[in-house]
Image (cartoon, rainbow, N blue to C red; front, side):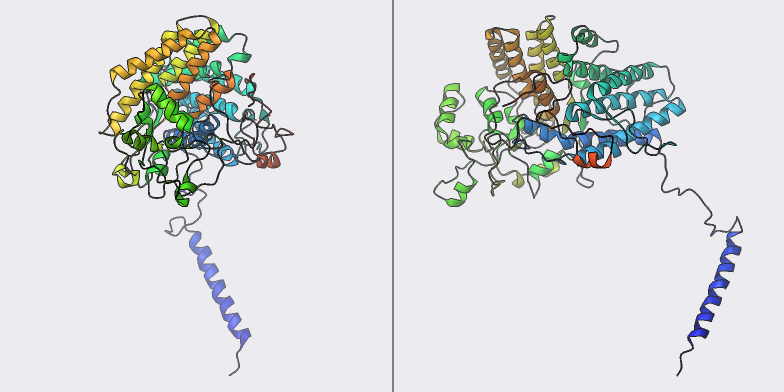
Length: 564
């Protein structure tokens, strides 16, 4: 049988023409249920309401900060994240691009929409958050697109924004804070809904804006001739600053599993594939020697046996260069002298749980997650550490926890800033201010732990008093204002567990605390900033040329330029 291709094709074409006529005829009827002549997809709006954009901006901003937090705590000798400073040209491209496509863009959309609608409450919140976000970008990256950012979809599109230097961005952020306070103080019938951080409370946002101004003034004080007067004015600004734990600016994680809303430290330490990094030995051992009441809230031991050094597997998992404290004679001598250890079997089992690493230890990662010290009940909502018990965290019921916090700007941080300013400029009572900061830190940590793990034991009053008295003695023995400041910032270092940003800023600003042990391995000098991604420079011709070197080119306010 012959196949008539021509006739077959002709029939198909005829059917296509008929279908086309039917389609055209149908589409001409505006009332037809199959009408596809629309320009807007209701399921993909091009603009969002400020009520929906604000909480998304808050969530995304926390995600951005969360992504950098561990790195800065590693820089400061607290955990083993980038603690040998081996940073690559694109190590932080993810954080950089996420900021500009996520929280930065969201906040800009809230600002534009709020201005158009004369919606002053939302405008004020977004301006305060933008100032916080961009001043933080300066603190970590030094320079960034600011004045020309977010114009990619504008009528006159700009996909290659210029980079503003850090001081110019700070100046712009001060103006944002001025505007934020004006807008938040303005009479308005509009209620702020969807606000995750402060529940729409305008007074709280005014305090936040004032506190961010103080934070920026403190951070940049060494290059600001008017810092003393401006800081003192900020401390007494109308509307107040964050001054109680109830006013803290913290992100509160949920305990939900699906979707995953728990603290990232919790999910990385307490779940089946636990992979939390190492806690630096000095940080936790110094707290033990100093009888810090926060110790059992910060860290959770999960092993009480001593690794057998005659067993190749155990020996391979043992931390190097004395970091395995239970086998370190000097550590025992110091612990006994401090009155925190006795040479007993029980205390050997206790000290065996102090399993971490020295700063900069880049030896291979062994099968040791079973032994590592992990974050405790504060701030990750894990488990409290009982001295007589150290079960493996995966064999507990802690998987229902994780409703922790990210302590972004807290009242005790503000008091430490104030004590620093009082010492630097000779006003107030810095010793009393620092003592108040220490007491508040201990109290808030203890209260938080009690609320999250019923087995927690409140920090004993006598222990808190002894700890504070030890600080006061050391403070009084310090001969100069600088040495006293060193003592204060040593305390701020311990109070800062959970927030690497303030540790990192304070250290670059002052060089304190000066007694943090140096890394045992260094890939480069101390990171004075994060590297601006090379990919950004390749895509944006207005990026700095050459790009700043992260270990030699400091941010604009860093006059110390620390080197090991």
